Image (tube, rainbow, N blue to C red; front, side):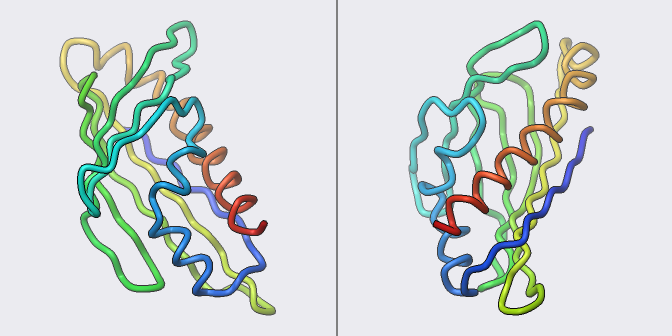
Length: 145
């Protein structure tokens, strides 16, 4: 199991940042390797992205199920691999910083199961931190525009 957390400080109002976090369609396209997404319901999203796992690059399909939402604070979710035996969880959180700024925090935990777990889990140790950092940085840039 690999977990990574990344945070960025943004100069936006609380409402703007929270609306952005809740709008999965706005940040779905910012996922590194984004190919497309679907929104079967308000609490569910399916991401398809090109995963760069070192020597292997492949399309990965994950289902995001929103598990908890604390208004203007935190959005938590579980991930279920639809194309591969990769599962996980994560959250986006916002906290007040200084001078009207807010800290956007993103966290992701992923683990592979099945017969390929021994090969995939070490690759996730590099993939997860890079993905979380790139996504949170892109989200911070996008919401600040």
